[in-house]
Length: 91
Image (cartoon, rainbow, N blue to C red):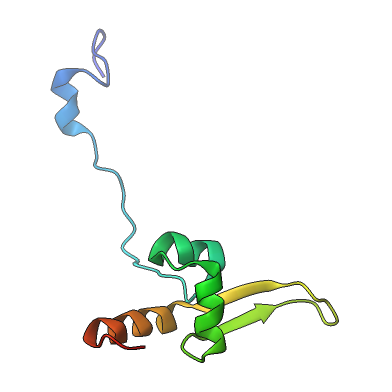
């Protein structure tokens, strides 16, 4: 670079590279309850009701003998439920 020129000057802006973007469109297969609420707007108690009624697939990960664990909800089952709901007004 010649002396007296700066990398962010007006004339050098056209030479900068665009930000690199990932070509992968990876989506989570399972979501935790706070993510379900944030992405789909479904509250925790409603998600539990849908799971109990067999409308959502979920799994709880916990150590053997433990009462507490992590509830994971299938993203695919949420999307299928929303698609079915959009085709019909009934669950």
